[in-house]
Structure formats: structure tokens, C-alpha cells
Length: 129
Image 1 (tube, rainbow, N blue to C red):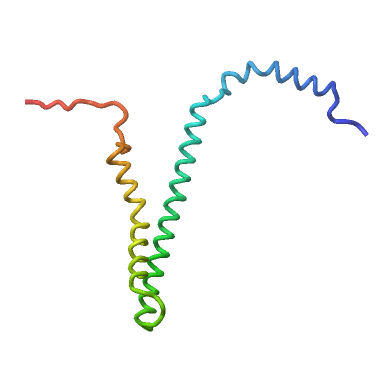
Image 2: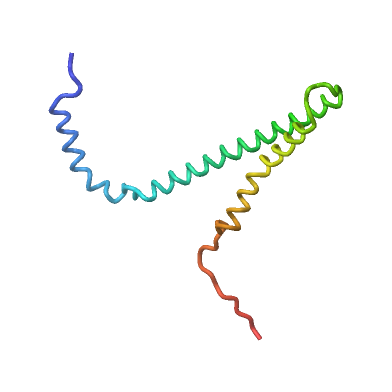
């Protein structure tokens, strides 16, 4: 049985890799570490924002739906064990959870100036007389 990886073949592959490296330098380059970390941070921030929005929307929708069903059951049977305070609290918390992502977006656009910025070349308008 023959061995595929012999010392001679490994040596030839290493020598070929060393000799072909100058040919690849113009085409292959390493990304800077700051670009990689910036991209990873952006991906992580977006993932956290998506998870946060999903929790707020699904939790708020669940609370609103449970408030509606509790109100229906209270109307159908007044002795169902659900008080109007619990129903109102469900509506209030559900509305706050659904509105919270919009509030965060508005706050980030207004307080911390994280809105869209103008990039590129800016030109001055000239008016003819």
C-alpha cells in the first residue's frame, strides 16, 4: 500500500507554495483588523436590534391579544376571575411594548444625532440674474 503524504511530497508542496507566493501578493491582501471588527460589531448590533424588535412586537401582540380575549371572557361571564385592572394593564403594557422600538428609533435620531448623514461631494447652488 502506498502512502500519499510522504516527506518528499510535503517538501515539494511547501517549496511550490513559497515560490508561488509572490505571484499571489498582488491579488490577495489581508483585511485590516479594524474593518473586520467594525463589520462584526455592525452585524452584532443589527442582530440585537432584530431580537429586541421581535421580543417587543411578539410580547406586545400577545398582551394585546390576551387583553382582548380576557375582555371577551369578562363580558361573557362576569365571574371569570379577571378584573378590569388586569385587562387594562395588559392593554397598557402591550401598547407600550409595541411602541417601544419606535420610541427608541426616534430617540436615537433626535438625541444622539444618529440620523442619515450627507456624504459625497456637496455643491453650492448658483443663481443667474
